Amino acid sequence: MAYLQRAAWGALVILGLLALPRAATAQAFANPLRRVLRHDTAGLARVLARPAAYRLQILYTRIRRDAAGRPRFRSYGYRLRPREYFYPASAVKLAAAALALEKLRALSAQVPGLTPEAVMLTDSAFAGQTRAWRDTAAANGRPSVAHYVRKALLVSDNDAFNRLYEFVGPAALNAGLGRLGLCRSRLLHRLAVGDQEPASRHTNPVAFYADSAARQPLYRQPAGFYPGPWPRVALRGEGIGQAYVKGDQRVPGPLDFSQKNAFSLPDLQRLLRAVLFPEATPPARRLRLAPADYALLREALAQLPRESAHPRYPVAQYPDTYAKFLLGGGGTAPLPPGVRVFNKMGQAYGFLIDNAYIVDAEKGVEFLLSAVVYVNADGVLNDDKYEYDTIGFPFLQELGRRVYEAECRRAETLRLMGNEE
View (cartoon, rainbow, N blue to C red):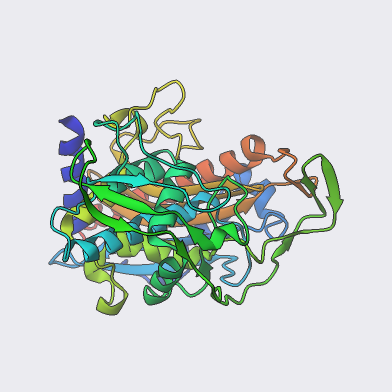
């Protein structure tokens, strides 16, 4: 399949682009992100003029390889505030996907046949819970962890995330975040179903089967309850907005996010690095995954919706850059030729987030870029009046373009210099 060939190429890129040395002059040690933002800011000026109002944060990491192909990272930030709260929305789905595969890998040591492709049937056992016994988008009509991972990462499917949340459970999810060193992050609830106390502490019973007939279970996980406590994450600004809509009522005052999911921008990028560059991650902070698990995550992060066979996504509804905010503008622009983006984005409550690894193998370019911007001029949350299309998406698209083009220029300069330091 054409995509498998491209996925194999992507894996090779991750494992071993040609070595690119550091620049020769002292200027290289200045903040290149600030240079990019200062240069011709017409497309970025509106947000950059009031970065605090837009809660803007940017984290840019250059990647250079040594002669053996080992990556070296150097990070630069713009208004980086690890303790300033923003709602991470769907950006948290990569954590749930990775930790679900990790849990399944651990269980498979005692349960032969328990793989990510095993049929996963979810039942209900508490108020508000729902069952998931079939999935017409799957090749065999049944859900599985692998299928949920693909849906959650390819087009940011909320139900897929919720099923992974229920399988892993909030206790293990937050313990996993802590073990990975993601200390400014927490996962407290499902998405898009109004999940809150006490339902968020209750998880559904789940059973796994070897095939779609679902006769004899390989493994059963009973309903669970997490009594707490929730992890304490020291964050500022968890009350957001001047008012919010609840039902048909407008409620004055900020919306309290202290009992909602959180994920700092450095933690988001650190997680993406752990998925893409496990060999460059300290052993104690690595995900406990097999090569096939990493391959599944990477494929789902990079794949375009039309390249997916199961599930299938119509191009009219899911354009190539539907889930690519940086460079792609959330479906408004194609990616540059030859570019692959491994990313997970988020969009809710006026926040737009993208957490991406961008690579152009032909030009010898690879870098990490993560950003969050808040676009809610009227200060009212839940009124569906956000400036996503007029401010947010254009800003992230232009930011991605500026950094990508700066990387291309630098790679070309190094090439002309014969890659000499």
